[in-house]
Image (cartoon, rainbow, N blue to C red):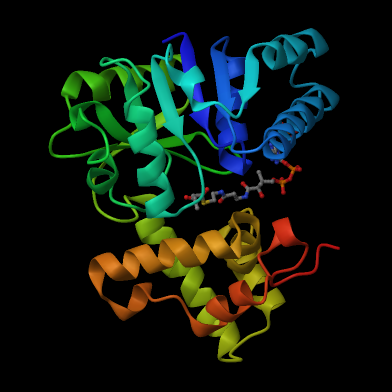
Length: 282
Ligand code: 3HC
């Protein structure tokens, strides 16, 4: 697979585009406005500069990687792509509308994937005329650092498509793949999100301070970040959307978003991206 398209140039889309370009793949990133496309480009540029400054990447390789990425607002540039990965906001309606538009553009044999954190892949695949070529490719944030990709299989996925996608992710991108059946949250978020929301509940109930909750899991379980730090890192809006999807799927209180999470999102306290969440980043 030599030509990949990424829909969405946010935190995840930019990260996926970066790892593809560093692996020598020709990449087109589509954003909805010129401003968002420029922001996606700046995000990748900054990440590559960081890798150069840490001695992990040669300047010439960073420039070559940047040279392999084109940014556009025109979805029609996906027409010659062999693999298209959608990484837009975690909103089912917007994703479905994007896939419906994409369906009229891509070739019959193009593999289409969603990087959704939690939405059932089968529901998204219904937007395409050939759902057997549609799968979940779930990357983790920060994409250049995190070694894992979940390959999510629907009941109607063509096994050859899954094998090609897996080969691309492992052999070209150098990631480790785990395979998940298609249910909300897949493997990792099904386990991670209840843990994170439980930490929010613990803080909300005044059981412990946020610092102690985070220190507890950093030093007591050797996690790189405490749960409330990780919520801020993921983005509280994304956390809420994922918890909503899990709750809708399983109808179990353990997946319900805690009221504090909802209030924080409504107040615009989204974590690092907005400058304030459980912690202040200003
Ligand atoms: N892009 C590229 N590289 C980055 C990076 C980024 N955004 N952030 C950190 N790095 C690299 C650094 O360059 C450094 O590399 P080096 O050691 O080779 O020089 C290394 O990562 C460590 O970075 P730092 O020393 O700056 O900071 P930390 O040691 O605190 O690590 C972290 C930062 C990698 C983010 C670490 O805290 C971590 O792994 N946190 C947990 C992340 C996690 O759990 N992600 C999953 C979220 S859930 C998800 O994505 C699913 C979704 O569906 C919700």
